[in-house]
Length: 76
Ligand SMILES: [Zn+2]
Image (cartoon, rainbow, N blue to C red; front, side, top):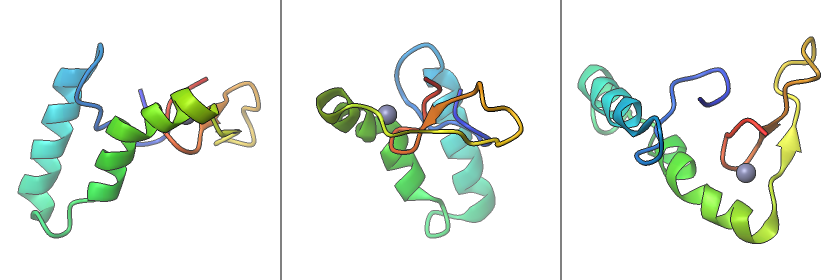
């Protein structure tokens, strides 16, 4: 799943959790405060990465073996 937060991916293996997280967060924060940008990135930025490649970075400096993508938030 995504780095350091709940994932919003609505397809693939964890799609059920994606829907669950979105509904839960909209319910508790409201539609306006929901982070639509993150939800958008989780679901659509993967397409950009497919075309241009992932933007890898190390989210946790104490665990340099874990590499994730800045754009689509996937572990690489
Ligand atoms: Zn990516």
